[in-house]
Length: 338
Image 1 (cartoon, rainbow, N blue to C red):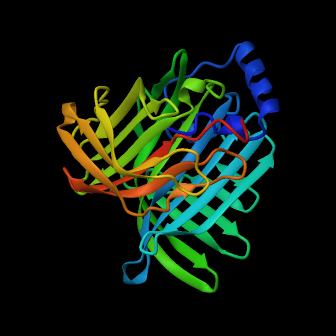
Image 2 (cartoon, rainbow, N blue to C red):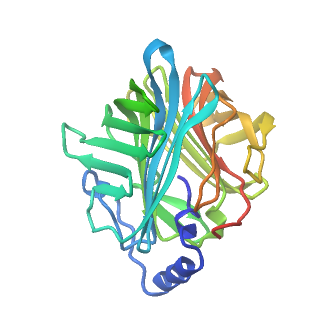
């Protein structure tokens, strides 16, 4: 549940005008999500994205956190790759990609300059693949295979975005990740675990969903948790929040009454206008979860050429059910592309 404002900012004023016109001209209605049909593109809607992120390890236990996502909307495509060396605490690969041209309905392979993300119907749940080249720096190539079924968030895959807005949203909470990371002259075989999200809807101009906290946790006992909440630019919850808990056995639940508490210390990354917590507490009473998260690196803020920056990073659970989490948050001012 993320970046509701971001695709709207790709080319700024012209796209906002287009979004307003689309909203006024009988926008399409969201339908219950069905996979694999809905892996493909839905260009009739204002905004859509396919998100992958996770942690992979190379030889001798060197861990990397990757983020690779493609956004689409109103005739434009935008992609981003960001790779953090968690031991060295630095970003080692990062690039923005942008191109014009709308997607085709049902399209499952998305190319934006030197970035490709796509799905193929291989195996019981298919397979996602990422290939992102950064000239002069390196390349990330990943094969991402779901190892458990996709999960529909909200009600039949429809979740609230704020007053009068909603989106379709489902997740692949566990992906087996294998591939190659090239940095300069060094080519490293990597493997690990990832998370997949796909979301679309008509909410590009809904300012109530421009700031958020989002958490994706994978527990060592085999269960998974996703929580999101929309916040004000100063970090206060707006009251719009939702989540999905996937137990190791049994059907998913959808907690609504949970508490997200930022904990010190905080950091204002280079290029950011807001400050970001390095620790969090997540309390989900309905599923008996009380977690404390600690960021694995300080330098996990993503700066963007076309869009506002946001925090996207790996965290470990230091108290509560053992596991790891991805944390995404934005408190950036509406500047630049807005």
